[in-house]
Length: 306
Image (cartoon, rainbow, N blue to C red; front, side):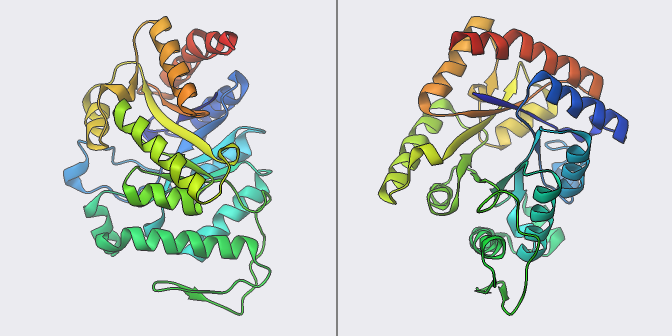
């Protein structure tokens, strides 16, 4: 099992020094990656549910890359309808090259209607735009002479460099759990990265996705199952965000050490090889102590279980 740490809420990082201290500690401890989200604006009505402070994900990913040596930059997730595919593909490819191939691209459709309105993107088109953006980015990343013609985006007679360092492109994990999302993951994804589901729903969706992959002749060994969990109790804004995302208390990894280790074994048995932990702490110092506590009390004992 590979463990990553979610960076949000970003108010914990008021400057580059606090960010560098945190991500370097995460790397030294042994975390696989840091998770970076994607919001441009937060409607005033949603600020009670989700923090208003969000750094640009590619800028933040670059700051993480230049501050570390092996820690992966995991976009968790990029809301593809917010972006133009060639520009996003260029930023991701550039970061992948300059980080030494440490980028994982989580891709989602988004959910905040007011944010779509502010950005001038039709909410009802978000699924179709996501599919087209994925196809266009893959074309730019892999073709020597990229050509694409779609409903929303088209290009031809262009050169696209640099190509990503990872081949054929950085791992693409599809976020969400709607029926179309599962099909999207089976069609386009290198992994699946949902958030906020009761255990029964997660179990059934995992089985459905396995069937979709098998129907397309895809190997499970080449596909990553990843999930995001809150560690220890949640309250206030975090609790509201969890419920909005569709989860319940099954979204929170809490209880005795033995209970938590058994939960992790259950995730492993279901086929999940990556877990992203959202840890408590209002400052970067509190987050650092929470990372050390999780690694000492949970990650290391879990590794000893074999």
